[in-house]
Image (cartoon, rainbow, N blue to C red; front, side, top):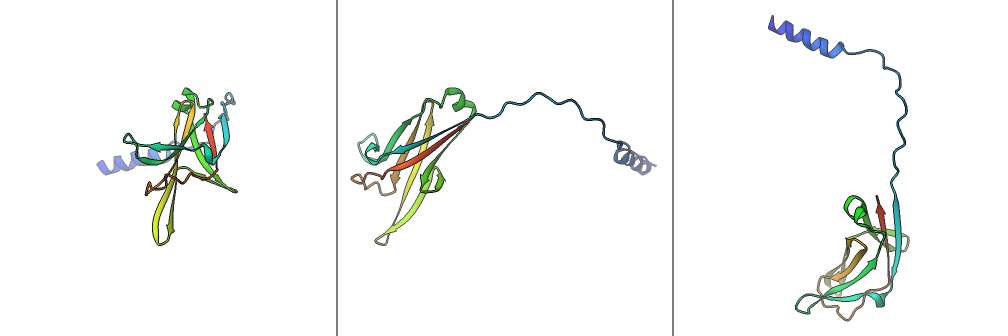
Length: 146
């Protein structure tokens, strides 16, 4: 008897609530679209700044890109992304490239961090020995979405 009641209840739940779809409700208010801002920034080789640790040891290069459009609200609630433009290719940061020179393996890293009002970009190589080598000109694209 118990099995029969469970079977009847299951049949009721499976087939008891079908019927034609009701009429379409009224159209709701238009939603707010996303806002966006894109900055393409050309960084000249001579504008890279040498970066050192607290003991004065060379650790790479950096540059701060002013971006007043990156407000506190966008920083807190929006999205932001940075890319390196290499010819017709857009590469998201961070970018890590592995190379081999004279049978020696090394890597370079291009990265960034965001703060209200600016974006800092960094260039580092894993041997930290190229203090005399200044990075080449680079083009960065920074996108904000809120």
